[in-house]
Amino acid sequence: QKEVEQDPGPLSVPEGAIVSLNCTYSNSAFQYFMWYRQYSRKGPELLMYTYSSGNKEDGRFTAQVDKSSKYISLFIRDSQPSDSATYLCAMSGDAGGTSYGKLTFGQGTILTVHP
Amino acid sequence: GAGVSQSPRYKVAKRGQDVALRCDPISGHVSLFWYQQALGQGPEFLTYFQNEAQLDKSGLPSDRFFAERPEGSVSTLKIQRTQQEDPAVYLCASSPREGRAYEQYFGPGTRLTVT
Image 1: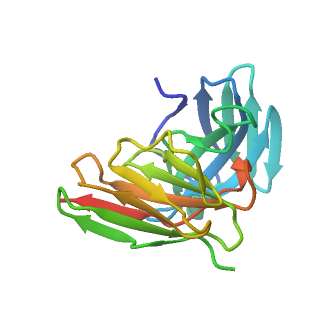
Image 2: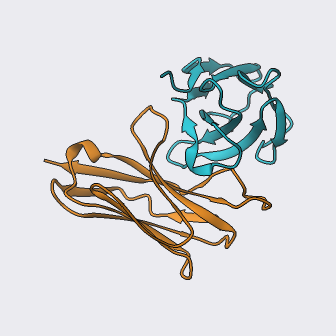
């Protein structure tokens, strides 16, 4: 079983919908939780990160971390066709641990927002 | 400013051929990471440099994979005797400081095909 599990989708929604993307993980040492967006034939681009538990909002994007359940989410409000991409969750641990610094990614969820 | 650049963008190698993939990190970034992204999967960690020191190479899949960063800037990932399991996109990321997992900037990747 992988340390980070993510439903690959694909997910198809109409423009303006609220999108919910999720990941679960098994390594309790993870403290940094990131969401990346990756367009076709491009490298991943950081959208948001959260340290430890809690919520974080940035424009149309909200990230949530529930460490007790080992579950993280990304919500996209008012989705746009330009949001169509692969969304990757990624995690990392604190200093002193084997997961420090390097990222462990989920499989990625393919999202299509159609007009 | 300039981001992380990688060359070549595409590489076709015959099985058994050696290949060298280059990464130019963002100027001044001390940390450099290599990841391997198979088709339809999330990136997987290969190795990590802090300046010229290779601090973690636990993700290299075999002794055919070798990475170096001799002057603490440009890095090269070398794959000897390419095999059928090696095709993937090889991503390089750099970070301005050690341990900032949330501050890794990715290049566009090199797509390796083995014939």
